[in-house]
Length: 132
Image (tube, rainbow, N blue to C red; front, side, top):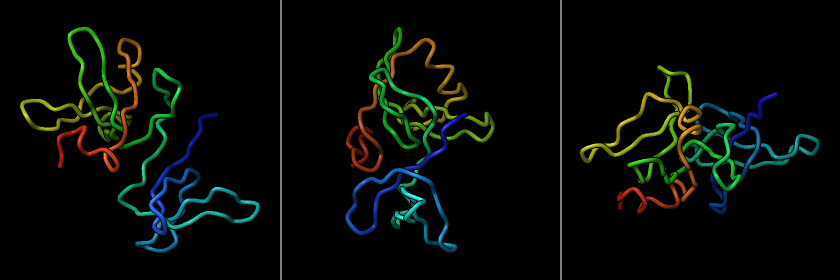
């Protein structure tokens, strides 16, 4: 069975929280971490990212919005994990000619021939993308 979970930054203290995504109303989103006691909290909707089901080279879970260091023959650079609706899968965006471009190969396909390591995420580490 595949693991479906999300992460988001808490509104009250800015810390990351992991669990199930819930919609409280049209604009309010939360993440539940314990259904037995209904524990969870509201999160900033802009920071919500889904778990891809994949792990990086160090065994860390890869989430939407993560910045990975892609290391393969002839290529070593940062990329961003994003959903590609056309491929119905997780893909990476690379900077091509100064512009971020969503790739057409899925992240899973890249995993067979590339070394990925999580470097951070687009919310906490925008400097990795030269987005100051």
